Image 1 (cartoon, one colour):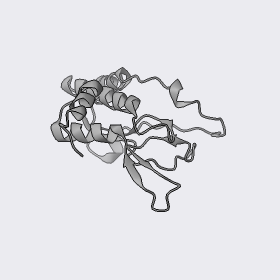
Image 2 (cartoon, helix red, strand yellow; image 1 turned 120 degrees about the vertical axis):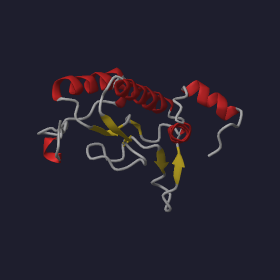
Image 3 (cartoon, rainbow, N blue to C red; image 1 turned 180 degrees about the horizontal axis):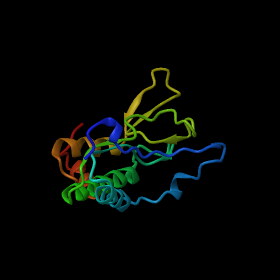
Image 4 (tube, one colour; image 1 turned 90 degrees about the vertical axis):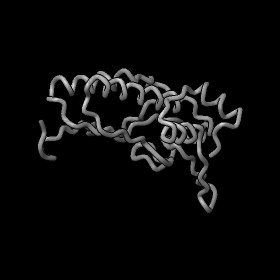
Length: 163
């Protein structure tokens, strides 16, 4: 069992020549089973150390829509996989979304979006607008219920959730 930060496993990615254009977000399939398998692998092969998942999110084109249904499906699927892994004994202790706000991305600048909130860069006050994913995630945190997108949209139409 890890006892110090020195014994913690860090998984990162990097590239030597980052001038290669990134593929469109649509080329990255939503595969939450991969998170569950990775957590199982870490549990089995590394003595089940504490794991904190951070910067997990879905890339979309900037200004694509405030109705980011694919991000809701992404988040729900990954949180479900995380829950299944924890129920199977994974020592996952934290899950952090990437990101709260649309931001400047290192490789894509302002071309891509990961945020739950859209920022209007043309507005001098940088107005922020919650996306559908922000409403869904807020509901999830408050209710601790992984409501499906369709179920969540249905409850919104009946006025059950007000943000």
